[in-house]
Figure (cartoon, rainbow, N blue to C red):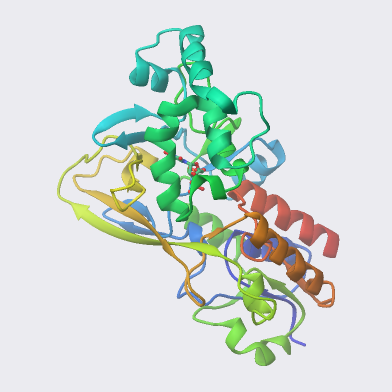
Length: 365
Ligand code: UDP
């Protein structure tokens, strides 16, 4: 066999795996069904602006080891994600913090805000939340739930908040401080030179094939390597034989505007149900760009169907159970490692994917 590893999918999991394997002298072939490498962190540079082609990616982590790991591939700028929420024209700071509470109710101190939220928690107070709605009410009360969470979440997931797992809303901090940093992590930034630089560095020396669909030509590819690293959807790998897992899709509409600054912030969330997109991303602000033009992307959540791009796993009970059954099947695939958001069916952040890839490669070398 020509290669030690065939890496299916050139996103972060596959690229980290390949980089570490090659460092140990292994030969890797990395294939991707898209026309380029980089998975969802892939960017295109237009007019000097890096456009995040598959959704905005802001690197953040609490893990010092992962932070120094990514810094070997690129320096990071000082970007701190501080999105705005637009609810029917009213603007609020995110995540939910003293600025939001002040804008919502005029409260000036943490105890004033707490008193309002406690009153609004109503029946949810003190109960272990069974779903996203109960969790949200419990954290921030009725007003914020109705204006900033319910509409956004239901269009994002196309499910009622009572049918979604509570952990999804716990991704967002709730803070009784005036602090608009969307993440609690100690390290945060955007790679200077863009994410492509990181992926390019990781894949230096690998054999790469793009426009290559593993699931359509498996027999051909299986003969090429001793081991396969599979990062695609796990149900697709097993030909959906136990049923289809649910994913959420996204579609993007990007426009160039002949103005310097469109919204004054990188991310604005549109939180009412009627606006069909969830976010407007103005890419230049991730890198403090001063170009005379700007690029904005409207992000529309959409249904996913077999063969389309899967973005988010829907980790409710039903899908989790099905995933667990697929996971059992992986034990028979002794020469395949399954990793990443789609193969592990996990709502991973970038640092978690990198961590998971490092563990996988270290335990295999
Ligand atoms: N969310 C919300 N309102 C917002 C932003 C987020 O209700 O303005 C909820 C929504 O359910 C979303 C979840 O919080 O799916 C996680 O948001 P995050 O920004 O982490 O999503 P991602 O960037 O992964 O799409």
